[in-house]
Image 1: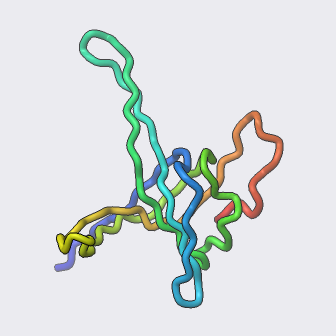
Image 2 (image 1 turned 180 degrees about the vertical axis):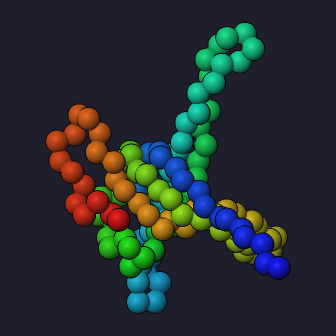
Length: 122
């Protein structure tokens, strides 16, 4: 009997750098980091903030038509799946990395903004 498995991740965070866009056959792919923050108190009651960086890959044409609104500092809501890959580095060693392959991306309008991102990136 086949068991049901789920590979789904959802993040809300800020884009860390302008995306690197590359051609991939008949489509394009954008890659960029997104930072999420977690706040917690330690045993002494002191407040801490922990930032986690996520590598994100967004493929054009999978419900996402363009990358124009994605830029450093923009708040984005992303869900997709985690993909693990490996490659050989310049030193010949195998390197491993994880990234989120986005199935959905929204650029979030913040309260002090007057314009809405074009297209909503759904």
